[in-house]
Amino acid sequence: MSLLQRVKNVVRSRSIHVCFVDVGSCNGCDIEVLATLAPRYDIEQYGIYVHNNPREADILLVIGAMTPQWEDKLPALWERIPEPKAAIAIGNCPISGCVFQRRDTYVSAPVAKFIPVAAEVPGCPPRPTEILSAILSLAPTVFKDFEERRR
Amino acid sequence: MGFTSFAWYLKEFFRREWVAKFLFVKTAPLVTPPFFRDVPTLTEKECSHCRACMMICPAPGAIEVVHGGGVWHPEIYRGHCIRCGLCVETCPETVLASGRILSVQEADGTSFDATYYIQVDQTKCMRCGNCCVSCPVNKEVDPQMGSGGYSSNDEVIMRIEAGKHHVIHEDRCVGCKTCENTCPNTAIRVARVVTAHQGEAT
Figure 1 (tube, rainbow over the protein chains, first blue to last red):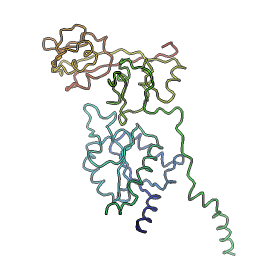
Figure 2 (cartoon, helix red, strand yellow; figure 1 turned 120 degrees about the vertical axis):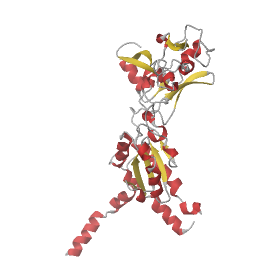
Figure 3 (tube, one colour; figure 1 turned 135 degrees about the vertical axis):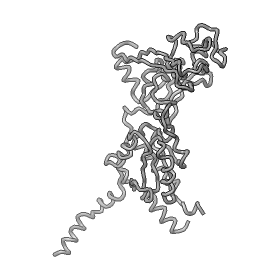
Figure 4 (cartoon, rainbow over the protein chains, first blue to last red; figure 1 turned 30 degrees about the vertical axis):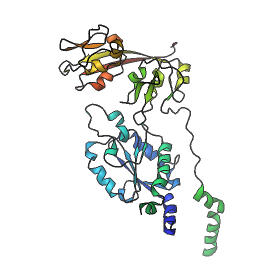
């Protein structure tokens, strides 16, 4: 393993930038993601920073049941995230559509139809600890030795 | 002197203990509170296939009573289940458990009582018979029921008779909503009127 890769591993393990995007949820999961920022759960002590900017992000948190307006915008947003990147589906909605997946609704869940989803956190809404542990356990598998593995 | 006050600041605020804590200390991992209701788990009790859990479940596709290994048992799908705990509360055999719902229910003496009304919109119904065939109660009463929903058995809940949908035994309905989910036209609706009781023996 080259020295550069080792430095990158160390830096990336303590600096994970997360972009969260709401593709039509009830805001319950948004509140849980924001609760991870609050002092009780304090996501930043693990070096995870939450943004709304895909150009800065490493991990995309997808929240919501995928409304028709997002069908072209979500893949475009996914393209803008620089490598290495991963997407996590937060809550039931991006996995199954949850209570919105009924007759005469226009949601097109699951989100995995539009972008590759690396991890799923079920729950309606999931607990902040579950979101936190999902990000922390996914990060090493995506970021560790990324350049070496790609070669 | 400017420098000494600066050095004093450094000494005061860059204490070794504080710096180490700033860099390495994390808050203790939070424990799951006892009142948290996770996805229901199966207890050792035997399921009687009454489908009360399917009846009360508010999330589409979250719970199903399936036959496997010679016994009926409820199957809960993660990613659909919203962890409301209603199936745990309503189950008469306490097959499911989640958090401390069962002990609280025993202490409070709560129970559910439900009646069902089947409503068919005859202008939307196209008499395909999907509801009659898919109905699990019909399946038990008349396993011979054909694909059109025709039946000569008078004990079925509903059947297609002379090109028209007839509800014969509304009182036998268990409210599982299987007919609603299989109807291609949203013509059939099962209204569930659930009453909760407290302080009575279950």
